[in-house]
Image 1 (cartoon, rainbow, N blue to C red):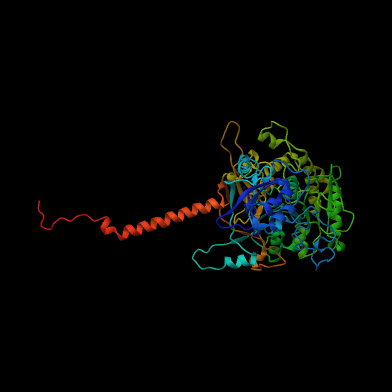
Image 2: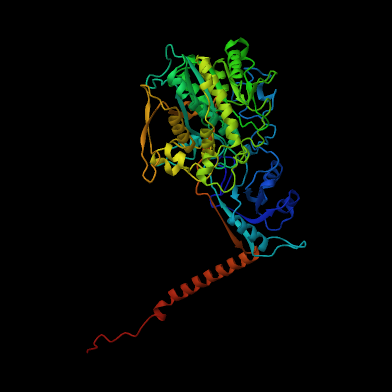
Length: 635
C-alpha cells in the first residue's frame, strides 16, 4: 500500500476506521455522503473514479468518510489526467509580477491544461493506493459478502470494515512545524517535519577545482541541465517517464557521446552537466545551485556561465519534432541566444528529428533555467517536445510511466534480452541526444569538422531507459555501482520523488555512477568511484575497478532553510511530515446495538465481580478462618 507523504492529509493516531464501501459510480456517492446508515465509510475507488470531482465531494462530506483507498490499475487509462496544477511552479520561476506582469501566472500559455490541482488539496482523511492483486480481491470479496445491499435492502451486521494507519506529526504549515522542531523540552526532542531535500549531480568535461570555490578567472562554462525528480499524488509511485526521465536520459547519452570528442579535441569552453533534484517542488535543486554560485560556495559562479542548454520533456509523442523555447525578455539583447538556436538547428540536419522555434512570443515553460534567469539575464534555450501546452497527458501522475513512453518488448524475452533490446523510444531519444551533444560541442567552441563523429549510442539509451523505467536490478546497472549499493536495485521502476533523505537517494546515486562511467575522465582533478564490475565468463565473482571521474554531488536543499525564512517568497519552503507506521487491516464489525450490549454485559460482569470481591474481603475472617488448637496441646 502507498500513501501521500505531505501535510495535506489528516489521520488519527490510532488509525481511521470505517465500513467498507466499493464505489461503483459517481451516482453511488449518495450512499456514502447521505443515505448510508452505517457511517463513517472507508471508500474503495477504482482508478477511473479517482477524479477531482469525486474527491472534492468526499472532502466536503468528510464527516462521513473515514478514508479512501484507490486501486491502481495494471494499464494506463485512455484519457489523460494530471493531479498537478495547470500552472506548475507558479511564481517561483522568473515570471513574477516584477519581471513581466503579462507573463506571470501562465497568462500567456497554460502549460498543463489537464492539471486538476488535486495533489495540492488538503484532506481530513488518509488516502491510500493499493495494487491490483490478491489482497485487493480479498477486500472486494469481503465487501461483496457482507456490505453490498441487494434489491434495495440494507446490509445486515456483521459488516466488513477497514482501518488505515498513517498518522502524521506535523500540522498547519512549514513555519509552524519548523518552529516546533526547534522547541527542545527533552534530551531527545521529537522532530515533526523535515525539508524536502536530496543532492544535485554534476560533472564537467574539464574537471573543476572544487576545493577553491567561487569565480574561476578565464573559465567559461556552457551549462547543460536536466531535472532529476518527479512526483504523483502518491509519494512512492512517481515514475516520471516523460516529465523527467526522458530529459535526463537524453543528457546522459549526450555526455557519453561527447566523451571522446572532448578528450581528443577539448573545446575552449568547459561543459558543465547538471542534474537538478527537487525541481517539481518550486525548483529546489536549481535555486540551491544559483544560491551557492552567488555566495561563492560552488566550483564556479554565475559570471563563469556563458549560456544554458536545458533538456526538458523530449519523449516525442506526437511527432519527431523538438521545440526551442527561450525567454522573450532576456533574448532581446542577446546574440548568444540566436547563435545557440542556429547551432541546434544545424546539429539536427541529417537526423530523423526536426528542430523549430514556436514562432510566437511566449514565456519559458517550467524549467530550471528560470532560476538562473531570475538571478541574471543569462542566454539559454530549453528543448521540449511541445510547442505551447504540454503534450504529456499524464504530467506528474502515476501513469507517466514506461507504457506511456511506448516502451514495450517482444514476448518471451528474458530480462537480460529486454535490457539489450533497442526500442523505438530509445531510437528517438538517441536522435535527441545526438542533437544535444553536437550543439554543446559547437557552443563550447569545438570544431564543426568533428560533428560527424559525435553520435549517441542507442544501445546505451535503451539500457538506461530499461534500468529506470522497468527494473533497476539488471546486470548492467549491477556492473556500474559498488557492492554496498546493490540493495538499492529493485525489480520495479525507480521512484523519483525527492524525499527528505539526509543521504543521496537511489535516483541520485544511480545517475552519479552512470555519469561517472559514461564520462570517466583521465585528467588531474577527479574523484574515484569504486564499482563492482562484471563477472568474467564461467565465473560468478565480479572483477571490480576504480572509475576516475569528475562527477560530483552538491546539496539540493532550499536556501530558505539555511536562512530560516520559512515563509519565503523567493525559495521553496516544502517540508514533509514525519509519520508512524503505514499499514491497513480489514475485519468484521458488529452492530452498534450488539456492541452496546456487549459493553453492558462487560460492565455488569465487572460490577458483579467487584461486589463479590468486596463481600468476600469483608467476610474473609469468617469465610477463611480455621479452628485453633489449644495452647497446651502436646504431641
